[in-house]
Length: 114
Length: 113
Image 1 (cartoon, chains in turn cyan, purple):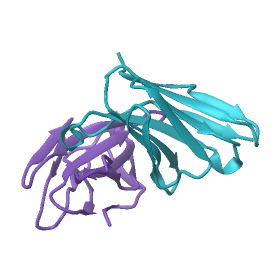
Image 2: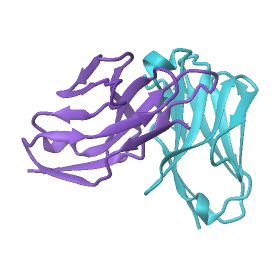
Image 3: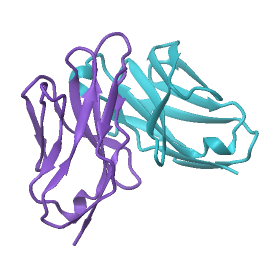
């Protein structure tokens, strides 16, 4: 009954390989977001989506791409993973009333690039 | 531009101590304000919120009051427990077309028995 799930929860990958993280929601919310969390930087927005096939860049989008082909899934792809992309990645969802409801976050994916 | 400034941590308290975590914001218009909590190894959870000036949000013994005149939303709890050890994030939503919340950098709270 989580409403939002991220997969995988943990991943170790090698430098230079592509990696895709998945965010799946069952809330039928319009908006979905990808953040990364690093010590000293808090949460930084990578990309977000405001509808199927509608996405936009956040503040740290270089080296990342996203796709949203259906409402429930928002994929984050690291095109060629680098060690600087070692981080914890969070997906968040919201309905049209962000002013009242804020976001709901997933449990995160811990990615290590070696 | 829009931003949130929150008290830098880490904050270390003894059980039953009083907690304040300061948060001030810079935003256009009249934002909605939020506090999120992140327990170790988990995602962020909404702790409390306030959507207009002078509103008080409360949950689990935590409180915060929306102060428009000082653009602040300080988090308080009268008696903290070990289980309150977590990272706390202040955030706001200011509307417009950006669809996004603006977050502070988080404050780590450790409560010792």
